[in-house]
Image 1: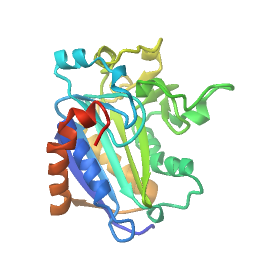
Image 2: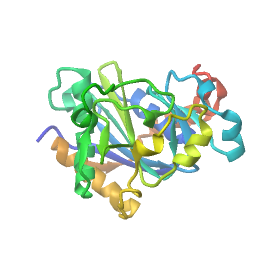
Image 3: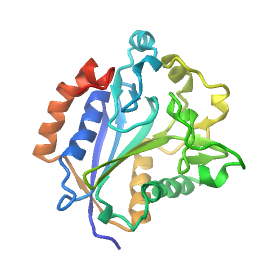
Image 4: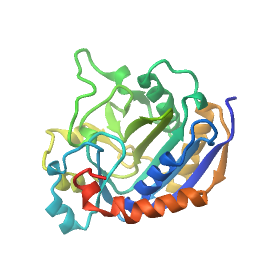
Length: 268
């Protein structure tokens, strides 16, 4: 067993600005030397489109987003755009010493996505890493404006199709990672919100609904938390935001994540 327990924060379904503000608050309030590591589980209401930290918003059809009432919010992690509708989302904040030893950042990413393999396999799905399934000569890690169009080495595949996406950021001995688990097919709407439409994308991605998983969202959240605890050998203790974290999240939601300067231009 590693040092335990971790904080388990269940945020429920929140707006894009609010939920991204909480993620950043947990990151900026974390002290790698004395803070307790965090697993946060949440959803999105209303649906929103998130763009990567360094993504050019010109790749997004902002007029269509406005027509459909889909907010656009910028993440603190990199990668391409993700449409968040019916999904279960997680975030992790910890220090390297909270995890099994990993020699490289890439290995840390493998460690912190291992629980997803256990989660999907517990649902009866034959989940594998992309690096284990890629045919000879396949190009992994290619940058794409739409997150699910590309595959990284430790993305999760089921039946050869990518399910969800994950991104990591390192800052001052702190590891931050978040990722999405799509519960239902939202690809048609997602494709209306981005300007580039990768050919054959529908055959490259999947979700729990298309895979025949009918488990209720509440039970999926419990299973995800259980898979995380089992994979890392830790305990999880239900918790909420501290007053300091809540205050920081309120400030970020009202300011940074409520502004076009950050969400559309990445300034701030």
